[in-house]
Image (tube, rainbow, N blue to C red; front, side):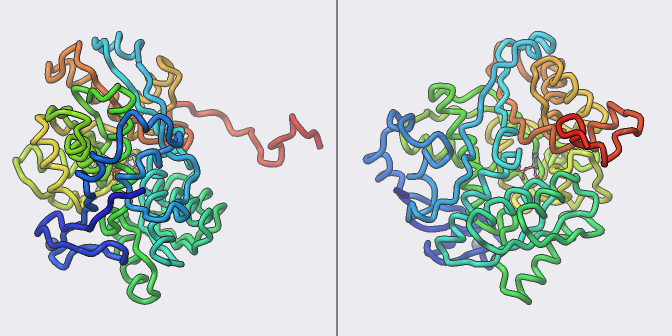
Length: 408
Ligand SMILES: Cc1ncc(COP(=O)(O)O)c(C=O)c1O
Ligand SMILES: [Zn+2]
């Protein structure tokens, strides 16, 4: 199965033994999982992948789980990659694709990371897990913890989308709503970890979520017949998907599956919370804390990503860029995408559509380039945000719910 060898600090390269619980390095750096890619190259062939499971565990040799019995899966990954012809025509590009992560369990790409993290928690004998979340990671954690029979403690901002709040409770997690942002939630989780001995599943403090998310990079290569696209649009909060895909490309090159070429990595943020865009424009490698962060794209409300230097390195090394989009523009783009392509995107994914239009108009991207947009979640999880576009009169009284099907 896995070719896992060890973990390595992304800042100081310190080495950590696999098979034990680890979080950040003493220097503060997030840990990255390393594999024996020579062995994987010798014993694994990319042609075999299509005979594997039709979920992200088809890439098991480059995922960290040792015992197949530990894998906790709800069918995450192998999401569709859809050619967006009508969108492309309107924005003047002929080769625009959308990777629709909204069809994952719990309606977002967070399922990938949490499937991997919870599988590892099971393998490490953990019983109680905790997470600070902007919303979708909480839903995914709650689902996988339920599937694994683990106790889940969740801290989310009080104004988190209703879908996340209800899902978490339906999955049986213990939910605390916090007057503040994900950064405030993180402090409360850290206190609980100290006090109660919970296992911290925070983004990048836990080293295995990124491994699940990197499968978005393996999949896009597989789906495009091992040719990477020219540009990737990624809605960036903590940036884990972007960092993960960048890692996947390096691994695939070491496996001999792709060459040295890389897509331009384009980080898209909301204008109301754009620490990465700001740092990129100022030529910095680390972000400043973005004060008074506010956006309907809840997943992008991360005022200071822990892995900011990894995001910045990937954007710059790839010749990419970082773009901020207003809430008005991203919701408009979401509605346009839905009516043009039949895909109802999360506001985070919709932000990428608005950014695409801008970068084509500015000439940063050329009409023939192969472009992949990651729609990281389903619009169905954001009914409050989209209801501002489609107001309706009160009248759907709750006691009439279901009345058409079962008249009372
Ligand atoms: C729908 C959606 N898109 C994007 C993001 C940002 O993800 P990342 O941490 O990989 O930048 C989130 C995070 O909560 C999200 O829920
Ligand atoms: Zn270190």
